[in-house]
Length: 497
Image (cartoon, rainbow, N blue to C red; front, side, top):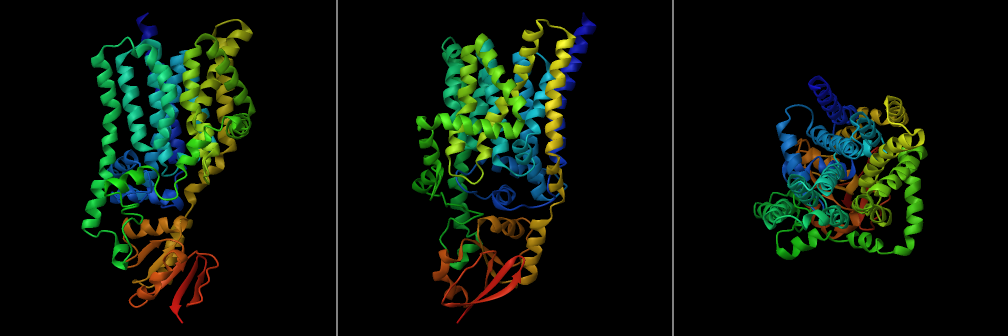
């Protein structure tokens, strides 16, 4: 008996390590060597300089990114922060494993489910770049798993873990508010029987991470007082990327910033969730994108897994659907260029339910519980995961992507040291990284904008500095001479007529 118990512990230990290490290795092998464009470039810059990112600030990501980027002694700063996201997404895969073990008590099956989640295109691509949502799904997955453990067993430690993970998730991204309805269903039945002291401790664990948001007004006030942002020297108001986005130094600006800042679509996303008449079409849309992520077979097993789970534990199944499923209407109705990242927690639950469906269908259909059933279950889940990995293997190629690095080199080559570089968001973020992390831009100043936004400043700026538009498309200006300097990337010099 002792030998059998020891063997089982080894199996569980190896399975748990595999559920994290294998996805982490896949993501790490896929990382680009250096900085990227768009939000990724910002998130490779802001944590290292301890600046302020676009709303809502993402304090957990910024603090963790600062630690990662300064503690790891090798690789570029961009690669280090990418690696942190890899660890976070691998952690989310690990909690797929933990959920399958919790529900089915099958560690090897849990590894297969973890790989199924990890090798999906959305999880893989977001786990192989600096991505706030990788940390968001990892913390949310931990919170959901701990909430399920508390729901089933009533352990105060599970309640504390769930509360802390949920609090950290909220301190990382506001999308974690969508967890609340499901958590009420999972936690409330057991919580009513707990001592008040236990509930107070859980409340403290939930609330404490929110204090991380205080860094925003404090850091903003400091940065402005010491004029750290070089765009201030151009006469621009505070609030520019990458140092002090939104300038949330006062209470009013801080609250505005937490609400999403200027032009925020957060309210549109939440309002869309109340459009219940659209839910039928949303379910159909999500079915299509989920099938693209996992394949139709996995989706069928996930639906069956949910039905079989609901038959035995209806309250648990409903809590899981609410906790992990409210991101679906939010993500699909949110006017966003990359809505798939908002769906990660729903994809996470699908991987769990697919394993549950395979496991329980095999037992029910064959009417037996033995190694044959287990092997068939493993063959199906691992087969789906490996087929998916093969289909998405091209993601490995991004480790050879030097496009943003070449772009920075060309901008430096074609502009003088004292240039003002005006680039829109997608192309400004690599330049911000080069300026503030690598210190390669010399005295050049990066202004993140479209040219029309600061046209009134051009005359003043040209008295002391040349102005160059970087990848700004077909910009026209009757008051300026536009001189093409480079075609790839497009670099145009502005001169007064």
